[in-house]
Image (cartoon, rainbow, N blue to C red):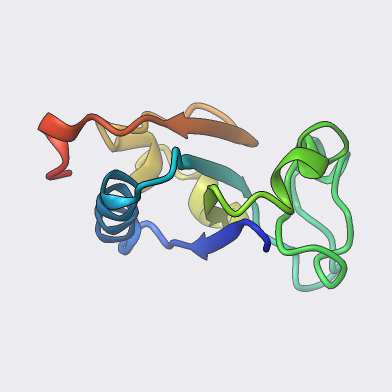
Length: 128
């Protein structure tokens, strides 16, 4: 079995996060929920527009996750069914706007990409 990967846009993020938190809490296994904010792929170059995100990138066709720390994290995540990753791709133009939704979101307060967050499940606060 492999890890689960879910993609989320800013408008979908809270709904997807709430669902994944509920699934994680309801699971009998000790699940790991990660949220990755990373560069979208530039349509002209076919590569991430963010150089920090590109440094550790492995071709998306080869793997289900674009992550800056792939060489360190991927071997531990890719074949782990306990892991769910919510991948939030940031388009360059949107990310450059100081009003970018992930920057203003009180739960995220994104400052830079790539950012990997280990989202812990708190059963008393499941309504996100």
